[in-house]
Length: 245
Image (cartoon, rainbow, N blue to C red; front, side, top):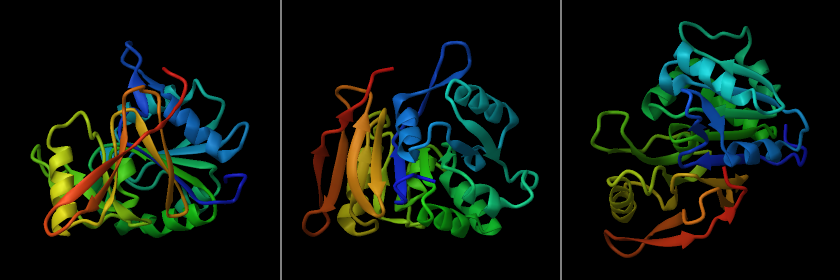
């Protein structure tokens, strides 16, 4: 639980973990920021890899990545069955839940099938910090853009909507992301929302956006809002710069 008792979400546009050059993953300053939000010296952290089908190799890489941080680390898998006897009790006992990237459409389908959507909401309301990158960032919002259905991006309109906004991830690294999000917001398919470049995270307290943070000097976050019939406007939100990698 966060020591301030408030519900926090950290939505990472990309770059929560970065390759270490040895086929491993290193937690970026954004993960350290998520740890700090718990207020705990040695937080209990559970990572969730539904979006990549709970692949054993990826789970092992994340354990290795988290091992450089002082934490009590576990994971939640849903394939081939939940790996903990009581999913709700396990998640509510965490200080931080971190959700990996992958297929957000598959993640949402499986979470709803297992009742994880309501468990995550309860955990968030009880003060468990929620974080995630890419699919793990988009899922908390009302919707956004996704490659869950193929390389051509499509709208996702059935997010968990803990946050009543649209979300743009990988905003500066995948050319389709920016124009499609603006189109969808402009035409009303998605509500106005926020977007994050690689290496940038959006921090919400309750449902309020409070700041963006980044370890990349020139990276940005953005507010995307409707601006007249069929159009949207984008406003840059300057992130607070964290320590570099």
